[in-house]
Length: 627
Image (cartoon, rainbow, N blue to C red):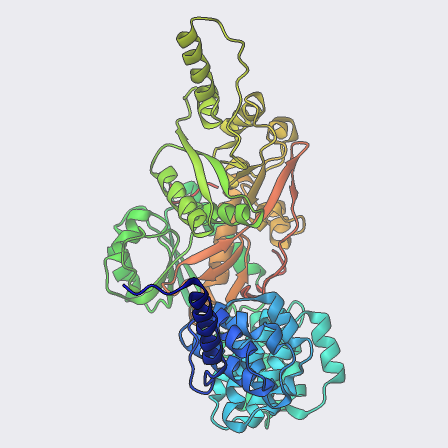
C-alpha cells in the first residue's frame, strides 16, 4: 500500500476535480443522451452557445416523449432555459409542448400555450408537419376549454393537408362545434370570413335550432347541403349528420310492444304501455299512416316462442320483454333477426346477442351516479347503508366499483333487513358500538366506573343511504342522535315516493338524492297531459310511465345511439346514452329535501366530453325492475 502525504492528497483532489470539470465542459451535446431531465438541464447550462443548448434540450425532450415520459419532457419544456426559445426553434418547442400538455391533460399549461396562438398558427410549420401540428393544436385548444378555435384549426387543416382523411376530419370538426356555446357560435357566424368557415358555422347553427325535432334536423341537413353544394362537408357529411339525415327513412314502421298485462307484473306493464302510447301520440313527427303499434300480452306464453311468432309477421322492432327471465331467453340466441329493445338487463356476465338492446330503471346507474357525486364534492371516505338481498348486492357492487375507480372508498358497509333494530344498525355504522365497547373494556380492566361519552368515528365524510322512505325516515334522525347529523347524506331515488309529502318527509331534510326528470322537473308537457287524462302517473308508477315514454323515443334512435358514441337523448328518465353492447345508461337529476319537499339542485357545469343531446320529438323533459 502506497501512502500519499496529506499535502499531495489535497493536490490530487484539486487535480481530479479540474479533470472532471474539463470533462463536463467537453461533452458533445450533439451526441450525448441525458438519462434524467436534471442531467440534461445541468449539461445544457454549461453550454455557452444558447441555440446549441436549446437544441439539445428539445432533442432530449422529444426522446422522453418517445419513451412515454411526458412528465420529464414537461420539466425541460417549462424550464427557464427554454423560456425564450430562439426564433428558429420556437415552432419545434411549441409542437413538443402541445404534445406533452395534451398527453398529461395539463389544462393550465394548455391555456398558456394557446394564449398567443390562433388557428392559422399551423402555417408556421413545414407541409410535412402541418397535419400533426393541426391535430395537436386542436387538442390543446379543446383541453383549454376553447372548442371553437379548436374546430377552426381543423377547418384550416382540411384546406392545407391533402393527405388528411376528410371523413375523420369532418367528424372531429363536428364534435367540437357541437360543444360551442350558442352565443359564441352566433358571434362567430356574424364575423366569419371564408366560404368553408361560414359553411361550417351555418351548419352547426342550423342543426341545433331550438326545439328542432329529429325529422326537422334531417330536413335541415339536406337543405344545408343544397345551399352549400360545393362545401367539403356537403360532399362528405360528418358521420353523425349522415345518420340523422337517414333516420327518418329507416324508422321502424311496425312495432310490437310486448308486455305482461296480467299477473304480478301487470301493473308495471300497463304503466309502461301507457307511457309508450302517450309519447307516441304527443310526437308530432310521426306519420301515423305508416306507423303501426301492436300491443302483445306476454303473460300467457314463453317469450322465446312469442318472439319467433312475431319475427314471422313483418315486425320491424320488438319493444320488450319486461321480465328478466324472458330477456334471458333472448340472450341465449346468437343473433336476433328482428331487433328487440328489452326493458330489463341481462346479467353482467352474459353475452349480448346482436340485435338486442337493453333499457330499464337500473339501480346500478343510480349507484354509479352517487359515487360520481361524492367524487365531485371531493368526498373520499363514506359510510354505506344498503338493504340485504340480491338487489342490494348489485347496488353495492356498482357503488364500490365506481367509488374505487374515482379514488374513494367505503369505510364501512352495513346491510340491513326491514325488521332489524335500526338503532343498532346506525350505532354500528357510525362506530358508536365500538366506542361503547371500548369504554366497557376499560371499566373492566381498571375495576372502576368511568364517565363515558360515546363518539362517532371521525374519518367519515358522508353517508350513502339506500333505503325506502319508511326506513329512511327512521335512519335520518338516528344519524343525528348518534352524533352524525353533520354528515351529508346521499341516496338513490328509492328514498322518495315520487309525490311531495312535506309532513312525512321532514325527517328526510337535507338528504340529497338522484331521481328522474319526470319526477323532479317543474315543467313537463307530457306529465301535465298525463296527469289530466290518466291515473297512476305519479309516484313509482309514474317512473314506469316515464320509462315507457323513453322506450318510444329510443325506438326511433337505436341506430344513432349505437353508431355515434357521443349521441344522447334528453329523456323522461334521464339523459340516455348507449354502450357499444347496446345497453342504455341514464344520467338523472339531483335534488335535496328542504322543509320536507324536494328542491331541484343545479345541473353540474357541462364538460367538453359531455354527450351531445338529441332533442326529443316532444317538448317535455323506482321501483327497480331488476329487483
